[in-house]
Length: 198
Image (cartoon, rainbow, N blue to C red; front, side, top):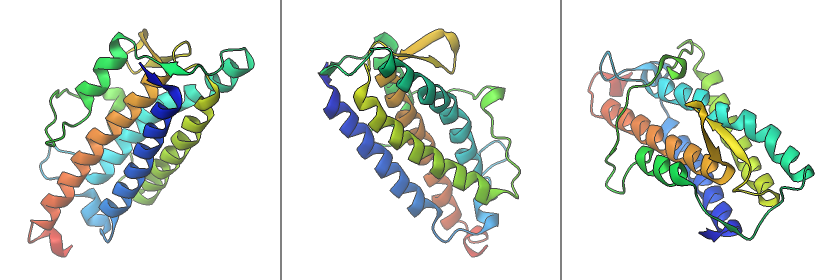
């Protein structure tokens, strides 16, 4: 259990760090580099972004509705927040370890596979940044809400609902996983004589 305000301050800092990381990641990359896949079955940087867009928006759409509804209905902020069973485990499963290792690997289901037109890179990038900005706003809005008793349907469907605080934490962990993936693609680009010149 931790103080709600401290928890939300930490999440807000993570969102800011992720925005800065993406700005650095995308700096001076050409359209060809953004679409380059290290292997046929590995995602490009744009595909990583598009996957994050699809997954993040599942949670953001719900948060935009349930946070103001809950506050209006009396489910207002409490001083502390405790994660639920899956809220403790899912972020740890998805987030990279401090060493950069991804502990739990899984195949992405079809509904979350990137489908963006590779010629529309700017739209994908803009959408990603807009999503992080919206997440930042919703984290602030959540300061007035009950982080434990508001439920968000997870990507697994109604069979698994997360506490609002846990859903916020999961989105950050999932983004961290795929930002690291995109950073590794950039490293591969920089180490490729052919792509570093693209």
